[in-house]
Length: 147
Image 1 (cartoon, rainbow, N blue to C red):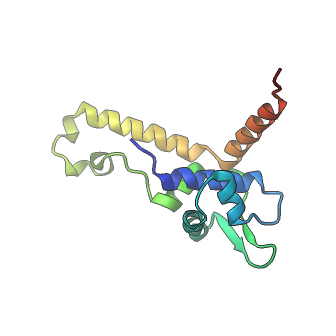
Image 2 (cartoon, rainbow, N blue to C red):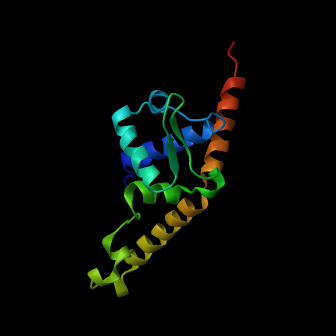
């Protein structure tokens, strides 16, 4: 299994917006620089997140992007849906009728359990949790000193 670049970068951009929530708006070029994502690609990602109602754009001299709702009401699942659509691991898990073996297939059952576990993690993990974990990592890093 491989997570798409779209979702990886989109999640990083959302965490960045959450980290900078206290600012009026965050410039795309600032996010792009901090997250090492091309501005053009990031514009595309933010457009999808905006269409899904997860971010808002603000025009003008102090313009940029802000979160459209509180961080504790945005899940990783919401971000994945906005950027990729519903995550699908295997066609047979999504639609058991596509395979004649699914009714008596232990592998099908396993893939279904794995899919459910991942979906549950995506649904329960909020942006707020990830932002708090990122802040903690940054604090730990700033407390380190070298001899």
